[in-house]
Amino acid sequence: MLGALLFIVLLLLQRGFCSSDWIGEFVGSYDGGLCAQAIRPFGYACFEHTVETKDGYLLAVQHIPNSREGIQIAAGPPVFLQHGLFQGGDAWFANSKEESLGFILANQGFDVWVGNVRGTHWSHGHASLSEKEKAFWDWSWQELCLHDLADMINYVYSKTNSKVFLVGHSQGTIMALASLTQPEVANMVEVAALLCPITYLRHISSRFVLRAVTMHLDQMLLAMGFHQLNFRSNTGVQILDSLCDGHMDCSDLLASITGKNCCFNNSRVDYYLQYEPHPSSLKNLIHLFQMIRKGRFAKYDYGFWGNLKRYGHFEPPAFDLSKIPESLPLWMAYGGNDALADVTDVKQTVKELQSQPQLLYLEDYGHIDFILSITAKDDVYDKMIEFFRSKQGSGGLGKAAPM
Image (tube, rainbow, N blue to C red; front, side, top):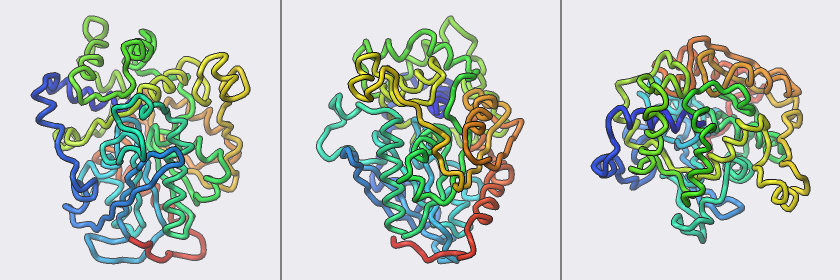
């Protein structure tokens, strides 16, 4: 979620990329899509797909068939990976083949599908709107869960003729949990694995994020005419820089944002910066800040009369976690040093579910560790895969999906 964005901004600030020279150096070509840029070079078959949402956004979905470096192996069920805020599908392939969840799942015989929400570098705009138009950026995570994730899961479900194993990180878990309250989505999901699960942000302890909320950064940006948030721009980096300048000690900015990460791979920083951060909308940030201020897991708050017009109520309706089917197996991993997905809030999420999810608690893990830790395979992913194997059912491994 916010950790993904601010983690990348930290890297930019640490390396001094606040000038136009940085923009030219690191905003490269995305020709050929994620497959060509970050997956095929490592020896994996990869195919690009486009999913059009009900509201016209054209989303890139990558398919890495059940294979180990191009060699067909026993076909496993489809696994759909949903990234977090200001990230794209590249987040699942950011470390080595031995450390990245996307590669690890393919090596284990799973049929890997990778989502990219609207506005990210890999996705393809809109059927009729230009990215330069205000209307293109008129969405929050509400649309990401009810349209993007729902439509991408439906696409994979129809292509594979199989229920989907869903994996999300951070904002990807907000999307997943909200979507799974909708029966039409839940019926297409076999099991969900959630890294740093978030529905509530009541106990967020990130000093950096709380300062941004207190100073109403979201409303300031709205008043300045922002609609897109692009933190690869001079303005974007300078805005985040100003939050530290003279107001708080940002000598250890990563810890002040995400919590202390135990196992971050510093050797990969330059590689991360080739792709991150991806753009998002200001409305999305406003919605996340509403969650912090109001302590609710609810739809976007348009104000008293706006809510009445859109929802028929003065308050935006909440996403009811008890509507997630009790029969849907859930697996959740969270960390004791996570300043965003706080342990108390995770427990509240679990309390509101009908079923008892299988939990993995790692006391030393921060928010970023769950996707970039050099020890995540042993600490997290192997356990997730073991859970998946236990839920594959008596039918065993399925057929390979179409390319």
